[in-house]
Structures are given as structure tokens and as C-alpha cells.
Length: 449
Figure 1 (cartoon, rainbow, N blue to C red):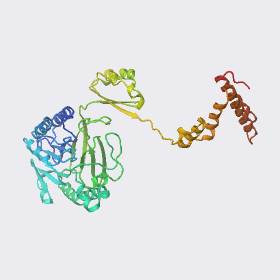
Figure 2: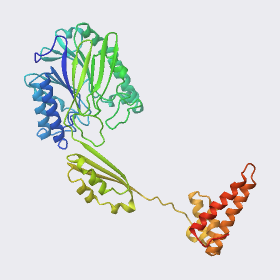
Figure 3: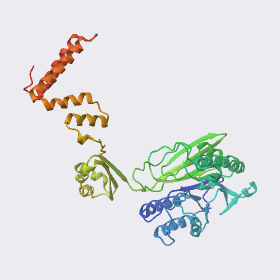
Figure 4: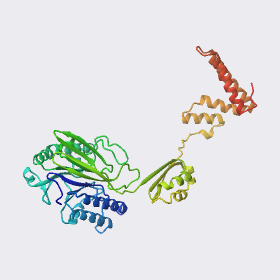
């Protein structure tokens, strides 16, 4: 190692979810370069990447892959490096061994399968028995992304998620647990590294991970008996800890190195751990992730208001969302929105159009009178025709004065009915009538009793 560690204690830089790709290159490079510089300055003894180092399959000559290899090489010139397989969609299968070519003064080890490795001197060595712990400075239990398709044939597609959780829990308790306890007895720091979701954790958009469709539970992770558990996949920093039998254990997602999507909450960064055989602690080091701002409008975006907010959005990545009826879509001036936010680094406009739902009413056009058509409409839309249809009939047989007079009489009769009801106050009907009479008079001054 780099010679700066204390006996029985290892300092580890945890980096994850770098998502290098052509579209993320600027963000990934800026944040990873910062993280690597800080990690080297902190004098870490080991660097561990917790998966999703790339965003998707990369060509060997792509600038994004070259930039990632450069950062791995910077770390490998300072300390040993360990990289585990992330989601297959991101860390394309078969690509991980390529990172070994970034080895410098120290080796780069890549792990694509479940297992344990030990750092012996400056070399990584597979561990299958207690004898393999001889001379180890660090024991790492690795749980990279597992192919769930391997379980489909045995348990069925509908049970594969729950079965995967049971299999991993059994592995941690029955295989990793005894080996980590043996390492602890020898004073060797123990770390568990995984890529997946913990039941009860939270996504970068603030959504709790509920249900059984998750690889880990906190109980299973603690059951592996590793002092520190370092996780990747979720882009939000979060952690758990417990003390049991004189051992302090911590579990933590470092989160993504940068901010790659709108709506992500929380600070972006990487973790520096201090890990011993019986205790550990970690610190979040922020990275210069880009600022993203979201504006939402129920209706046409208020360009004047956006112009007032523009000073707060200078250099930020802004997303403007609006919801309007489809008929008013043409009223939205997207160019004016972009001009109002001209000082932003990028402006993304998303629209949601509300389409008018029309219900067919068969035979309505053949009915001879308006009242019958309204009755048919009430039937199709499940509205009460007993109130609407009589009013429509009034329009066909009377003039404005007589219609107004008849309506006032109805109100008067309703008021008298209320007065006659048991328990009604004597003034109730009068007040109702007077209020109704005043309302009608305000609208139509010709209406009198």
C-alpha cells in the first residue's frame, strides 16, 4: 500500500455510478477528476468502484472510455484498485477486464462474480478458505450484479426476485459471515461491496424502495459480519449503522459521482472510509456536480416570472414542465421561454397535453326537441335529468320575464316547505327567500315579486 496506514486500519475511497458516456462525459470527468484528486490527497490506501462505471457499452476508442481509464490509472499509481460489475445495462458484460490494463504502480482487480478477495501486500488474491487469509491486510466480500435469469428455470419468473434475495441472504450468512468473523479474530479489516437495492432505501428522486423486488435487506447485509458495507446503484447518498457484540457496522450508498438526471435530490460525492476489524466510519466528500433546476406550470408557462428567476439559474441546467389543454398548445411560446432563461447552461422544455375526451351518444341527433336531446345527454353522461330537462322546456315555451317569475315562485315554495318542516326555525324560510330574491334582483333588475 502507500505506507500511510495505521496498523489494522485501512482508508478506502468508495466511488460509484460514474456513468461515463459521450453525453455524460463533461459531468463524469469533472466530478471524477475532483474525487480522484481529493482521494489521493487524503492518502487513501485502497480505491473501490461499486459498479456502473459506464453508462452503456463503450467502443474501445471512445473519448469517454479513455477518460475513465485515465482516472483509474491515476488511482492505480497511488494505491490498489478494485472494481465490481454493475448493472448489465451499464457495465456491459465482458467489458470489465479491460480496466485491468489501467494498472499502474499498483494492480487493478475487477470482479464479475460473487466471491471474496484479500489484499495481500500489494496484490489481490481470491479467498476460498481461512488459510488464504495469511498475510492479508484487507478482506473484501463482493456481490456484483447477479443475473436473475439464472433462477427463472428453477423458481419461475414471478418468484425470481424474492428467490434472489433469499439466495444472497443465505450466502452472506452462511459463507461470508464465518470468513469475516475469522478475519476479525485475526485483526483484519473486512469490507463488503455490492451493487443493488436495499429494501427500505430511497432513490435519488425520493421514492422509497418497498416490496420484495430488491436484492438486499439491511439484516442480510449486517449478517455478512463485514465491518463496512459499500453499495452502488442508487444515486442518493444514504447510510445505516448498528453496534452489536462490540462491533460497529455501517452500510452506505455513496451515490452517483455527478448529477445526471433532473429531479435528483441530495448532495453528490464519494466516500472516504476508515475501516478496522471491529469498527469503521465514513465521510461524504462533495463533488462539483452541476446544478439542476425544475419549474412546473399548470397551464401556459409564465415567461415574465421565469425572467425574474433567470438570475438564479445562471449556469444551471433548467427543465420547464407545463400542462395545458391540447387546444391551447399553440399558445405556448417556447422560444420566449428559452430567451427568458438565456443565461442557463441548458434549457429543457417538456409539455403534457390534456386531450379532450368525447363520448358518443348514439341517436341524439335524430331527436326532434332540445329537451329530448338534453335528456339523452344526461342519460349518456349519468347526470340527473329531472332538474335539467324541465329548465330546458321552460326556454322553449316562455319569455324571460315569465321564466324568471316561475323560478322565483319555485324558490318561494321551497322556502315555505322548509318553514313547515319539524325543527326548522321560523326565519329560515324567510331568510332563504329573501337571499334568493336579492340574488335574482342583482342579476336581473326586472325580476320582482
